[in-house]
Image (tube, protein in one colour):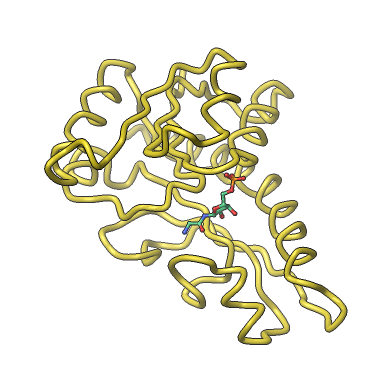
Amino acid sequence: NNKIAIFASGTGSNYDAIIAAIQAGELDCEVALLVSDKPAAKVIEKAKQNQTPTFVFDPRQYPDKAAFEQEIVEQLQVNNIEWIVLAGYMRLVGPTLLHEYEGRILNIHPSLLPAFPGLDAIGQAARAGVKITGVTIHYVDEGMDTGTIIAQEALPVTNEMTEVDLQKQIQRIEHKLYPQTIQQVILHTNRKGN
Ligand code: GAR
């Protein structure tokens, strides 16, 4: 089986979409671990309801990123995780995790990268007044939203749309595009035999 870990710190709507796609038979993997750096995140409740094992930590209780990432790596290995899927994990992945999983870490970002990397991408796009934005799924490297792009979907922005409308439509795209792309990446990689 294809065991994935979802890393999330927010409401977990992408976590939900991935679980739903698996239950619908559209995505052939198992969410074998949820990792969260925010002990109060809503996504943790969702994971508990679904009986997804969780690893929740508070970064402030570690001397540095290498220390908490080393513990994450141990949790990933204990749970036989093959893929890391970032879904609202608002932190740069450091060398400790990259060294173990580079090429097997995916991220979703709510803009058409390389436009609007970093925090509040939807707000950045709204303030810039762009007429097209969208969603990007990419491999994670050491940069901020800089890894190789795997999939993108564009969304036209009309003058009538508020930032809330924009966010809703971005999320609707995310919830469809992320499960589809995860499925494609996993199938493709398995076919190559690596
Ligand atoms: C998603 O919109 C995702 O694209 C974004 O956080 C949100 C998490 O929502 N990620 C980033 O901005 C990464 N830089 P969710 O908790 O409802 O899945």
